[in-house]
Image (cartoon, rainbow, N blue to C red; front, side):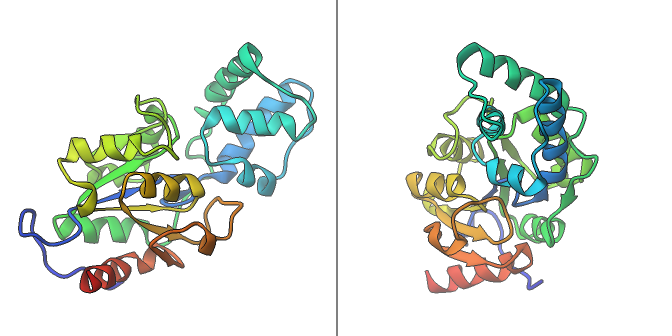
Length: 236
């Protein structure tokens, strides 16, 4: 992995902050999410969904995932019934957070490189904050992350810009001095709405071709992130 040129906070070097999505960006959590989803479906006598099918359902929070999983079995859930199933899913998934989840290639290294260069780091995810923090701690990412904004932290969820704006407010960084790294339409749309430069990573959870997400830059994996940021800096 190429190193980011030496920079220190306050010296004017761009970016001052990099925000990351979690699922499909820093971690591959589909195996655990699929296991939890199928346990939930089984409790209601419904057939399991494939890992690939569940992968396509991820991206807008647990409630939407549950709604999509039941819809795939021709059962419509709304209102209180959807709320109840979502609560059950939360309890089940809480037992599956890191059993089969793995780190995306390059994730640990790029976090260390960026943090070592004085860049402030955050995670902005529609995953609940407590689950997010447990995952970050499990994989040692919490050593690098300064702010965590989860789906239940308070701001309106991605693709609205609010979560990104909240994270940048906590870090004290302007939108023009930040980068959002993600894998899905929700990530890139939120970055665009927040006027933040975006980098889309292939191999995540999206039903839209990564080239069509509208990101400022597309990279094959996080292994390429440091060099992509350096290229953006040089072209600025």
